[in-house]
Amino acid sequence: MDFKLLINFLKELQNNNSKEWFDQNRTEYEALRKNWITYVGKVIDGLQSFDPSLNGLEPKACIFRINKDIRFSKDKTPYKTNFGAIMNRGGKKSLFSGYYLHIDPKEIFIAGGAYQPTPEHLAALRQEIDYNYEEFKAIASNKIATKNFGTIGGEKLVRPPKGYELDNPAIEYLKQKSFIWVKNYSVKELYSPTFIEEILLSYKAMKPLNDFINRCAEN
Image 1 (tube, helix red, strand yellow):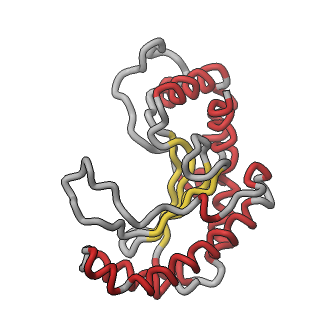
Image 2 (cartoon, one colour; image 1 turned 60 degrees about the horizontal axis):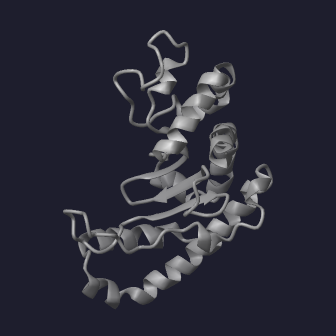
């Protein structure tokens, strides 16, 4: 995929976020979208080499629409100014954690884990961490993972969640409302011919966190 063309298109969209402009440039968008689907397919092929839960996953089930849902938003511009894909079991509409890829002129990153899980999923995840703290701690502090992503991020409570005491050894993890790992890239890195290989190495380091979280989604 020619990411230079994509970045240029997204920059223009940021400056001209209107239906009129988009309709005038729809042919270019459709060509970029087609190439994006092909690219995501290649990423999925690489992921399947170490994550068999993605076998049979179709790229179209992973990519997000360019149209925004503006019903409850103060920003009424009609289009997203990024290309994104979440490669997980069941596709973007499922609850399973996976491997996210975000391309934006201002921000290029990969991510994984649990972002804003449902209350039921969050409760199950906290319980799993409480019961298996040493296992989760080993995943969160793995040297390869922390070199790629740092610490587990996401919104966090100030006080312990209901049902857990402050002296619980896992309390700092139990306070999390999201459990995410993020790694940022430069535009130069995006343009590299080895970009897929680079993100696949980081995705592989991310897999143990996704696996732990997905145990809770399965219940």
